Length: 385
Image 1 (cartoon, helix red, strand yellow):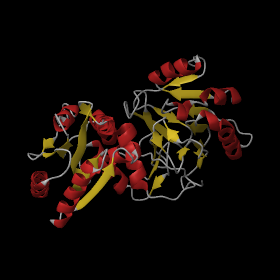
Image 2 (spheres, one colour; image 1 turned 45 degrees about the horizontal axis):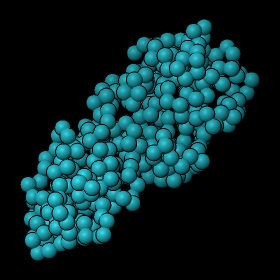
Image 3 (tube, one colour; image 1 turned 120 degrees about the horizontal axis):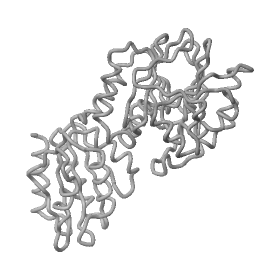
Image 4 (cartoon, one colour; image 1 turned 90 degrees about the horizontal axis):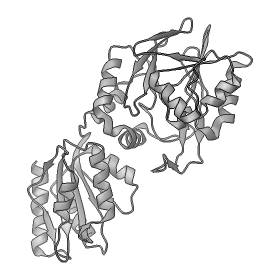
């Protein structure tokens, strides 16, 4: 990939072999592990790549540098998909200095058995490393989404090397829109840490930024307002759209019918966006990400073994784990005897700051005239909120 950034070269790789990123997120369009080289009087390599792509990464670096030797490798984030080849790189280039913060070197020792004591450059928040014309400013971004994370600002090119910030799923040889896969990445991986993301964004707001180089996904250039606005929205847990997401899990189809009836009632009344997800079948990370898109969420679930159906329980736990808030939540419960699903669903949200609908639909086995009327009342409440 050719970059339009002065003296900056892309040396990352595309991964179409991993089926589950971090062992949980499906990546049917692959994922990229990004690394960059800045060539100046001195040369800096920005981050490494996943261990399975070490040969390709080193070859990419050599294709850019030829016989020149890099002076630094800057490790912004120690997660293994970005640091796993750091030791190999240090062995390939014996004179290279390793740049990181104090927490970086603790983790390097944990992963590789060495903290590179004779070759390390320990930087602090706000420190500057000069390559010549390029002045690299280090901005700490703890818990976005690991404690050692920092981002780097090149003052010459107004470029932010943003670590996992502004990343997305999808390899770079696949054309796809940015928003959905960036949202799924953010909500799934970074979403718990909204306050920390906002703190990092506030540090960057005083800088002139022309390009953002993340560790996953495409380099962002030109008018960056769309991406920055979405990050502020996600970090503040603000709904992107007025609308309703209905999430259900159904064993024999009766709970699904109740969810479908609610969708019909909402659409008939002219409600805005209404989407549905089958929690037992749809990609869990997509369901979770979409729940953050809309202003209202309805969960339809059954009482199962005197508890919640597993897909429903796991969905709510994923939301609560990511500080789900600032939405209206409603419930449809189904039970043939001793139904407790609505009570348990609300309890699972714990201390999440949510508004709960006054109306709850209670289905006893299958829809009847009474529960159909409850669906209609819930639809009216959601429309009027």
